[in-house]
Length: 443
Ligand code: PMP
Image (cartoon, rainbow, N blue to C red):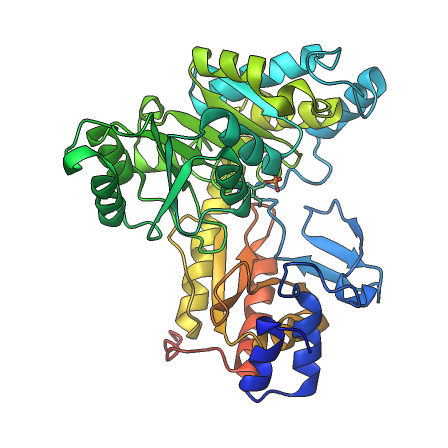
């Protein structure tokens, strides 16, 4: 009886009651509040992530062991690691799980300073500041950088943390069509005095916000073109590398490295530690002046408890492995493996006739389901066959662009991936989501 557009849509599509129920439970009401009657079974409880290459998880509801194709554990650092884990345990003993203090009130340990230096060096910027949460990094920083009289131009598919940060800033917000540089230029022209390049007037400043890899699309940002436009119109650039830092580029340094962009051309680099580094928290990297300014003014630095020391140690250690500073070449192997795994999996899915979004080298692989009613059937049938996938629907995507989002890890073996492909192919036939003719298999 509520005005729940999402809940009614499947009825319009004439689907079975079962699907409606599952879909309805997954979503929010028309005010964006979660529907409280969802049974616990919907929110599967993960019992543990195994340490056999971190490729499996156990669910407590039925305690089944399955291949994990859903987590952002791109380089496999989120499970016990021979280099990282002993150091994390040491830091836990030395510093405890929490500093119980903000950065300026006794919450800065030697690890925090080391982490900021390590991150700045890794991403190729003079300085960095870290926060306890990636989401908060975006939502707390944007209101410090931008305000009334300034203009934010945001990609239409930017993450919710960016959207909320932009709204909270009080700046004027304009959106450009997802990853279309020519539309960004059109919006800029409309917004600046006389539509002339080389001025940001009448705005105090203009900030263009993009992501390195779009988390629901698996697509790489058209960064070189976007930077050229920003330079032309004197706009600053803000790049969220949550899904690209550590995951792409020859040495894991993200989309700048992959696309041959000089990091000096990106004004503000943001990223999270919850994906490639197997930890938690987020960072902003930029000029020394910018970071100094943020350290004196950002409420999330001044008033929030600092990032947990063991989490900080995990990031430092995983970056050392990526850079080969642990004395092994495991980092280089992981980077080569994630690239090979991603490109193999993507091309095999396409050969089977699935519509897969995203670009080569991207470990994020959305398989289009379109019809939201196919979500429960697809995820349930995969899970029955011990493959865990994440399905995404409204409001994270438009209503009729539901998808299953596969995240590939360097820890997946070829055997894991082949098994997953077999299962996804069978379930794809069952649910009817192979929209293209399959390529004949070579004899
Ligand atoms: N930015 C992007 C692009 C993201 O996809 C996410 C979450 N996946 C975040 C920021 C928030 O990061 P975290 O989950 O580490 O808080």
